[in-house]
Amino acid sequence: MKKLILFGLCTVFLFACTQVQTGMTWDKSNFYEIGIPDSEGEEVVYYFEYPSFAKVQEDGGSGTIDISEGSCKKIGFGDFKSIDLAENGAEKDLKEVDGGILERWIKDDNIILYAGYNEETNFGFWVYEGEDKDQLGCAEYIEKALNSLTDVPTYFNDRYSFGVEILSDYKAEDLPDDGGVLLKKWVETEVENDEGDMEPFGYKVELMVSAQDNIVGYRDVLHFIGEKYSGYTAEFTDLDERTGVYVDEGMGDEAMTHFFLMEDDIIYDVSIKVISQYYSLYVDEYKEMAESIEIF
Image (cartoon, rainbow, N blue to C red; front, side, top):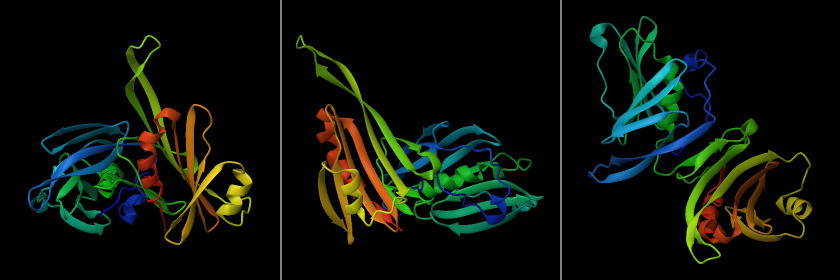
């Protein structure tokens, strides 16, 4: 199953990469949950990534992503059925990529239909607005959505070559300089006031996955912990012959825990920050996410 690639590099055809407008901005993402039938007709929950500024409309497993950014206005999604445009003088081109198949129909040097679909589920994303519209501007959005289609959302960072499974009910925001991703969500609950009555209360949960170069020259993760977090509670764990370290940095009403790994002079950090009294509600899912990290 293809894992989710957030904020990934352009993966469209080589010649197309050089033509895609550079004004596109997609540094914040949301995840859309959708049920896709498997081979036995059982509905399986999948997720795909889309820009936070876009609007998704869905009815019965298919719909549109309203982008309205640059030259790309709207793309469709759902059970993919190819349109045969050969009789109208267009040529079909297929390319196998991670996540599925890219299909494009070209007429008079214009890409009039651009689509990407997953062969296993036949679920896809496409744009076609007639034979007088060049759809190259939607290529990046279609490919990111296709690459992200998965039942296990995962963040992939190309600069520091790592991936980590993430939680789909958080909002994702890219960190500066491709340094990682910040996941945030707001939780509504109730608390008892001084009079014994229940009243609304909200709090924020933040999960951050980041990496940085070892510019100081720490020998290993133990040296790093000793220098940076001396006096804090540390818990060691082994992951695939790597030593990971949990460090409890929480103070007062705020709980904050880091999970550090170090390899090839890169320091990896998966952290959680939340009000202390609610920490126990999220620690298990946080540790599961932290220990899913893969270094490539």
